[in-house]
Image 1 (cartoon, rainbow, N blue to C red):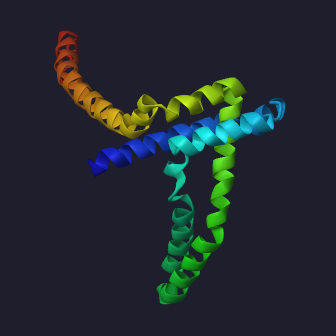
Image 2 (image 1 turned 90 degrees about the vertical axis):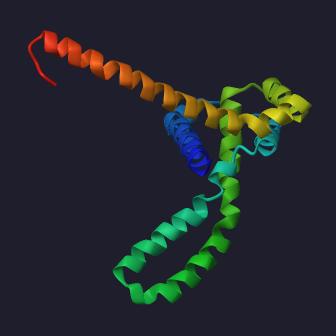
Length: 172
C-alpha cells in the first residue's frame, strides 16, 4: 500500500508540475488577474480538498537535499548541518503559503468564479467529502489494475511478436 501511495503522490506531483510548466510566465501574463472573489473561492477549494497536501514535504525535502550535498563534501559537518537544516525548515515554513496561493491562482485560470463557488459547495456535501476521502484509493486501485492489465497484455504481445518475426525469418 505504501508503494501505491508513493506512486500516486509521484504521479500527482508530476501532473501538477506539468500543469505549472504549461502555465508559462508568458501565458500567465496574458491571463487577466483573478477577481478577489474568484481567488477567495479558489483558496476555499484548495483548503477543502487539501490540494496542497502533496507539497507538504517540499520545503523539508529541498533543505534535506541541500544538507546532504554539503554532507557528502564534508561528513565532519554533520552536527552543524543538521542544526542548520532544522532552523531552515522552521524559517522557510511560512513560504508554503506561496504554493497554496499559486495553486489557488491556477484554479482561477481554469475555472470561472461561479464554478469555483460550485466546486466549494460540492466538496462540502456528503458526496464531495467522500470523494476527497476515497479519491486516492480509487486512483491507487486504478493504477494497480492498469499495471496488472498491462503485464497480462505484455504476456500476449511478446509471443505474437515472436511468431510474426519467425514468419519473417528472424528468431527471437
